[in-house]
Image (cartoon, rainbow over all chains, first blue to last red):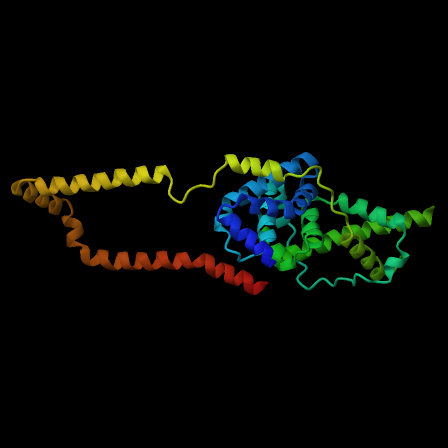
Length: 188
Length: 124
């Protein structure tokens, strides 16, 4: 949390609405995207994002700064998503926690990028957007909102193992999708 | 693309570069408009004040009533009270350990959520 953000939060806690407006402007895109990935409807996601900030304003005096402000916001939006999609929480809990070891993450500057064709890129992006809501939620928190596994576990109130399992399985689905693409190239 | 590492790199790259959807419109104005309407709940609400006043009035009324009762009526009330609770008074020696054990069990139960959280954190 930057010093500016801490100041804005402190001012907003004291009732400064201009400071809160700045916080909304700063975080709205990430909150909206998280909601959008889960509910998959633009209007509903906008509605959820607004509701998130209204609730954040109401609960802001109770925000003690033990977690980051954005993590706190993601917790609010996730709880609202749980209310909208009652099966989401169950599907996350049902993931289990069979992947307990650390998931190796490939370096961002991997040379494999050079071979990546536009078709593969588009195919993978389509595969990501068609993942189930529970996987979308985990993937978005991890890659778009750049939370650590611990932060995701704390945000979603899930065991760390379940978070790792969910992300591992989402990647497995993407790998299968990639394999299908490869097969279609061979048969063509 | 048969190399698993290469596949992993492609997937990781796709995930990290998955674009953020643009905001259809800025929601700041609508959020601020709702905030103007929905005020933060005060620490003490009017409901709390009303309940506190009622309780204080009852306690005050009872105190004044007992102060103004004739001594005979007060003595009769005390006798009735003793008669009503004599069983408890007789068995008080059993009641004290029971209350103590009950309190100990209650406070131990209060510690269970923290212990569960500690266990979960250790597992993490």
